[in-house]
Each structure stands twice: as structure tokens, then as C-alpha cells.
Image (cartoon, rainbow, N blue to C red; front, top):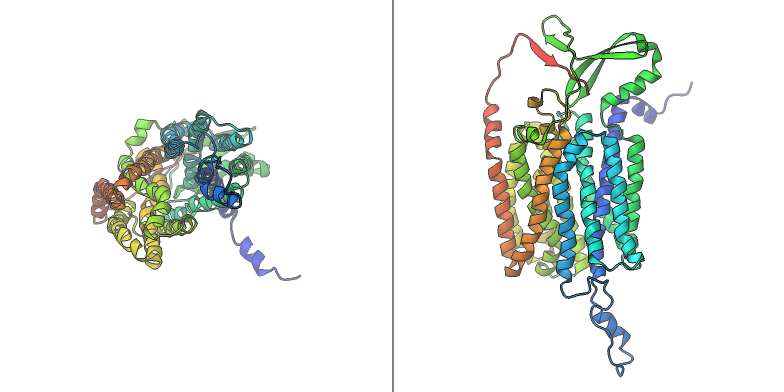
Length: 522
């Protein structure tokens, strides 16, 4: 018999549950990558919606100067963005999407808790694909009505809110708290991956037919919606039905199966007879002799909006994210223009250089997750990074005027310190609070908590770029003062939680003679 190849031995060393966990990690990563991929085209196509054709006109008339000019600087722009107030019109599309996203996020989590996540996410992705394609069809069918594009942006902003609470809930269900910060730090890089892919796809078509810059990403997210419907497993316990079908011999036996859900071991006893199954919640009295206490309880109901707000830490982290996301999205919308002015680079090079901020953000998100896992202190980790971010932002405003090298270094550092807390709060912290001990095992709160936190942060995402546009007319220093003030306010909002974490670390909890573990079924 031939020896088994080492690669096969390595693959066989993983258990079935580990394969499912890795599959869910990869699938949710790709699903939310497609969300960001479909959001990116509008920023790429803006330069095509309003074009300055004076240079093109000079070339075309170089050999025939005797002919009078019949062209203007905006005659090749796309109506209604050919007017002098085109910046306000393009801004209106941005804010219509961001405001709809912020408002819809608060409702999305509450709705998502009461519907199957797989179906809810599939619906959102299919509808997002439809509205993204509709924007591109405006180019093909020569639609020049501003109301049409505003409607598409608002509708797309609303349906895209189905994504984040759903994927975070799935990841929270599959991965325990032990390494949640590291895992979600790596997983959260889908934001940058989606932005990069969206830029490449939209940039390929933008000059020839910008409608395809929307239609192709729209088809991609719709196709991923079909993949979601076919393959997404929202909770490890959902696999038990598949296992029961594959092993009918065990249908008349009492089975004990240990599964890790949200970092805790759960013992499920199910007695099946005559095609009917009766499930029991159990309590274990440890370390005394094991006793099984049978209780009959109905499925826990989804948490209300006010109930989610009463979870300790939700309000503080939500308001902190408002200011943290304000800083992050201000960089997202205004960084290329600032680099153009400060480093005296053209628009293309400034855009390429601005991607280093995202690279630093990936590293910062992973680093924040690792540190918070090691210390067990999410709020303290965020607070330290916010404290370092404020002076770093001021340093960036000074050093970026002294050449390309210092600008590159400061972009990486600023990206890590600004996006680190943002990534940690929207992923690991949201998952922790959605499975907080005050919920007493009720796992149907994760989507609502995630929506409240990210929805509050999205308010800051809409306000930040607007304030930057107003303040930049008075000088870029005013913008950086605003960003530093936002970081300082985010830090202040975490002080109570930081104090609680630091004081609780010095408290030694007495060991009890018995430990009661209450088990609940998903």
C-alpha cells in the first residue's frame, strides 16, 4: 500500500467542525467583500460624470484655429452633473446613501433577529445588485433625472444594511471569545479587499462605458447572494439536522454532543422516538457529582431595541464608534485631495498613495484584535490607540508637507491607529456585547446589537466628510483639529469602561464549591 501524501495527512488532521468553521469564515469574507465592491464605483465614476473638456477641445482645434469654438468645458459631462453646482449634486448622492444606510441600520438588526439570516442576507444582496445595476442602466438608457439617481442611492443604502449585522452574527456564532479579536481582525480586511476590487472593476470600464462600472459589480453581488442562499450556515447547531439524516440509526438513542458556541461548551440531550424529537435544556453542577436538571423552556425571544441598549457597554461603544468612524470616513473621502494639495502629486498618484492608509488599517485591526485577546480588555485597547491617534494626526498634517517618504510612513501609522479601534468595535466588541452574560444565554441579540453600534457609527460617517468640506475652505489645519477633537471625544466616552476593566483585573473572585452552567439551545 502506497503511503498517504503529507498534504492529505495534513488535511485529514482537521475535524469536520473545523472545516465548517473555516468554510463559514471564507464565505462571509467573500459575501461582505462583494458589498464593498458594489459601493466603490460611485467614487470612481464621479470624474466621468463631470469632465473638464477644455484640454480635449484645445487638441481638437489645434489644426483649425480659424474656426470658432462651439464647445464649453462641461459639454461632455453627464447631465444633470454638467452644471456649476456639480459638487453639491455629487455630494447629495453620497449623503443620500450614507444617511439611508445610517437610518436603515437601526431597523435592519431588529428585523434580522426575527428572520432566518441566510434568507435575509440573500434578499439584501439580490436587491443591492438590482439597485447597483439600475444606476448603471441610467447611462445605457440616457436617464438624466437627478431624482432617479438619488432614489437608487437611497434604496441601495437601505438594502445594504442587511449585510453587516448578518455576517457579524454568523461569525459570532461560529467563533468563540478566546481568539475572537484576532480572527475578526483578519476577517475585517474584507473592507479593503472589496474597495480595491471595486476600484479595479469600475476603473476598467469608466472611460469607455461607465454604466458597466455599476452593472458588473451589481451582477457580482447578486451572484454572491445566490451563493449565500445555497451554502451559508448561520449557526453550528443547524448542522445537527444534517447529521441526524445521515445517521438514522441513532434516532432512537439518547445522544450527548458537545459543541462550542460563542466560546462555551454546551451539552445537548435529545431523545428521539417515532419521528418526534424532544429537546431539553440541561444544567450541570460541577465539580460535584454530575446532575442533569431537566427544564422545559420555549425558544428565547429576540431582544428589543431598548433591551439591547440596556446591555452594559452598548451605548458607550456606539457613541465612541460615531466619532471613530467620523475620522475614518473623513480620510476615505478627503485623503486623496489632501495629498494632492500637500504633497503636490497628480490625482492618480494621490489615489494610489492613499491606499496605504487602508494597508495600515488592516495591520491596525489585526494588531488591536491580538492585543485585546491577550489582555482581555477591549475598551482599554481602543482607548490607547485613540490616545496615540490624536497626536499622530497632528504629526501627519505637519510631516506630509516635507516629501513623499515621510508621507508614506505617516499614512501607515495613521491608518493603523485610526482604523484599529474602528475595526475592533465593529467586529469583536459587537460580537462580545451581543453574547453578553446579562442575556443569560439568549443568542438572539447579536444582530440587533451589531446594528445599533454600526448604525450609530454610520451617523458619524455621514457627518465627518460634510464637516471636512466646510472646514477645508478655511485651511486644512481646521480639518485636522476637528479630527483630533473627534478622537479625543471617542476616548472620553470609553473612560468608564476602561476604569471598570482595570479595576476588575485586580479583583480576585472566590471559587465556589459548585458551578452552575445553564445550557440553552439555538
